[in-house]
Length: 223
Image (cartoon, rainbow, N blue to C red):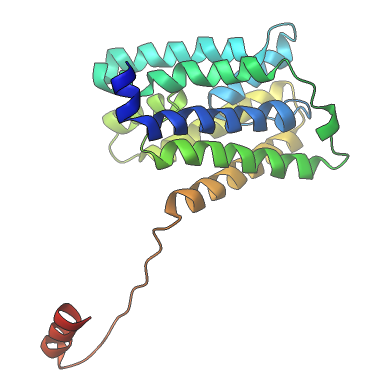
């Protein structure tokens, strides 16, 4: 185990740090304001709003385990094991952070909480995804949809699933909260993209000329 951690210490650190930041964003800014989101977290928050005595962390653990076994049965042992760490770490971070009081972070402006929560969720997920890992959960269902319906990309499948999860929450929340949920998703998607692409910027230069051979030679041999 020590050798495994030593070999993959960056991935282990990313999983712990990323899931912790993600969970903090949800527990400190999203849950206290009654905001909703997609994925396993969205389902967990929805169930928590119904069964207020049951913590978000327990719902997240149960759902993550269900999706983990679904991935094991349908996508294979190798894939399932790659998501096992987040399946355990994510609910644990939720559970740990639920012991603290975040009233000092309460903002009178709901939009400020939405932006802060979205930024932290995006930062946490981006750290995990930048190391080539996944948080599992609903992503597994999206991969399954893509497997059987090739014309539906994983990104589109995740977006559709998130929209469905948001719409289900209309049974408890006003329609405006669905709009908040969509904007929240846009915020953390933007942060994820920026973080994953950080340090990978490229510039494309198109040169139109009849002397393409000479230009190519100069670029390849001299630049």
